[in-house]
Length: 347
Length: 239
Image (cartoon, rainbow over all chains, first blue to last red; front, side):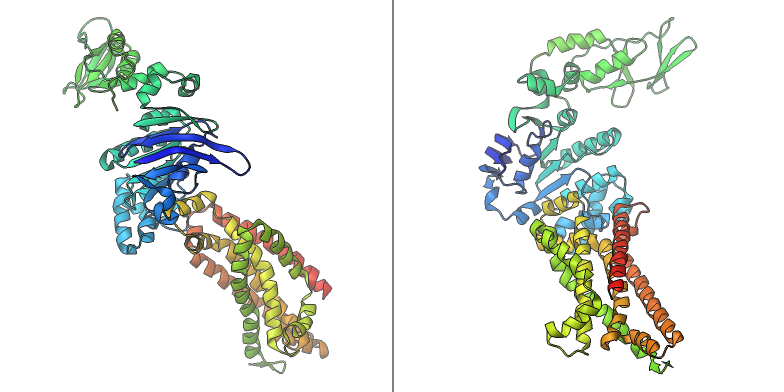
């Protein structure tokens, strides 16, 4: 658990990076700090491992005031991932990952062995272990950065815009990977980003900061979308807020329709196992598009309905077999029924 | 092997020692000075211009003044070694600063965040990353040192340079040319060895064709060689 109490940071030249911040990042959760540049989010993050010391206020890590700790010792117990990975160019991937264990005094051979296992854990081929960082793609480097932060078995991870410099497709992969890792490892993660979509995607809790370093809202992502605290948060959360909120609403009692098997309209084509393969009307064929997997969010249900040429989306079960059709109206009906500010959360 | 009435091999060995010991000493002195100049803006403002000025002192003047400063005898080889060390420092302090500047800021941030202490960071991360730029500087210093040793012949400590002085006295062109070529060959040989040493010390720099550190090293070495060439031509004309 990371607790900030009345933390303020002002520099000698008079600029105030952080007005007065109090918030708690709960253990085992991802807490995201999001805001425009100049809102003090990186400053806040760096106070946890004492790369920045607050002008006043205290930061506690599992109840212990960090200002009482020796900075290098404190840092070895906290994983850190930065933009562009910041890997050591002169060390192989394996030695990069083994950095903190070696600093902690573990034997190099042992640390390398563990590093190889970590590479697999973050989705890398162990063969890249002998390469230098410059021989990897940006996405691979970032995965190595995550492995390096995990290597010290630190219960706390600080991530400073770790995925901002990679292209959107790779970024989505890395985000998925982080969520998967987190479901296995349950670390306490403090994550900084300027990208609200990333914050909503990854955060168990999201702290929106204003320029000048004040907290505008601290809430779970669904609440942020459903009930922004003020105009700044609403503006920052951005367009399509209503639509994006659908991803946090489950489809528990969605009514499914049957698909017509004959007629002049669009017909769903299925294979022998009952899995959908596409649409057909007369001689015309259209690719399948989005399907809604059972247990998904209202967002995927609505998208399936809207992207189908028949105006009726395909719902499938866990094995990919057709369950039935989704009418857009059914989605809207369900949405009205669940339009409370704290809808059932789906990840 | 005797040529022109002199033992060539001992002369060559003496030349190598007189040229390389100052480079080594210069490196030892330059590392802390360069690190200080890299860390402190004030130190940088004083040290970099100062080393630039040092390099413009004519070598002959320095050789002659050394016994007065050090209290050594006029013909002591220590005079040559100390004078050449001054030139090596003049070149290498800047190389150390440039090399440390070359370390990307995110790598420094990552190093601090991983829990390195300042000395560990210097020896574990910063200096290894400065190697390509440092080696480029050492190569320039070594080659220039080889040519400067010859000037020592005028105060009787020139190793292969004595071939010049004797050749001039006897108006014997072949001896002068031989002296010139042998110094050149030795300098090129040492330069090639240092280049290979650099590759050995920084295998990562060659790991990918277009990569930043190597480009930077190259840029910096061309720049320094250019500057050094300029400076030495100034000095030689002064001599």
